[in-house]
Amino acid sequence: KLEAVIFDLDGVITDTAEYHYVAWKQLGESIGIPFDRDFNETLKGISRGESLERILRLGGKENDYTEEEKAELARQKNEHYVSLLVNLTPADTYPGIVSLLTDLNAQGIPAVIASASKNAPQILRSLEIDNLFRYVVHPDSVKRGKPAPDLFLRGAEEVGANPEHCVGIEDATAGVEAIKAAGMKAVGIGEAEALKAAGADIVLPNTSGLNVDLLNSLL
Ligand code: G6P
Ligand code: MG
Image (cartoon, rainbow, N blue to C red):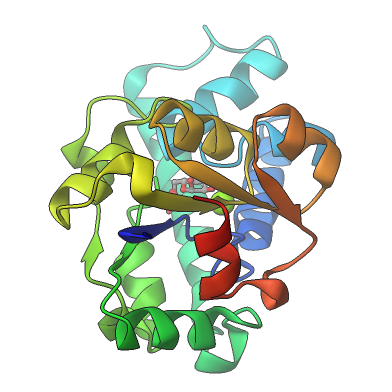
């Protein structure tokens, strides 16, 4: 029996994965490190600081900045990203998400957010779905980010669920790896090939096909 559903946020609940891409791309270009969508896939699910490190490494500039300068670059990226969030309204919640959350709540099955983003609470409030989640894991409360299982395990623990009876939902390969490392069933949202290779038990092209029966059938 399904004990909890643990959701990634960006790219699963709404299209903020695209905003992260836009903001990192501009930051990269401003320091002479352009990159494409394929490289961006490797940033999904990865914390702000680690994402910057990966971009600097891509450009061979990992030793060119002091810690203060790197903090300033990360701040600039976040400022741009947050400026894009002002446009978010409840209509931006991906198809099928509100009905899935409503059904989970009706059945007493906790819904949890396990995102690496420090902006998660604000996004959930803008979408007006914060009250549909039992718990939001704070990224600073765990030691390791995705692909380590820490965020998902903390989410299960906080709502008293056995990881083996949980389903995680992710759009990032690092996130699917984290779910599987946590011993949970994984739903991938997006391109089947990469998400299957990362270990997804099922991959859907988008969120519109999500429902409680489908998640239960994975256990
Ligand atoms: C999620 C996104 C990443 C983002 C990370 C940190 O994992 O998939 O693209 O870098 O959160 O987000 P933040 O809003 O704290 O910069
Ligand atoms: Mg994501």
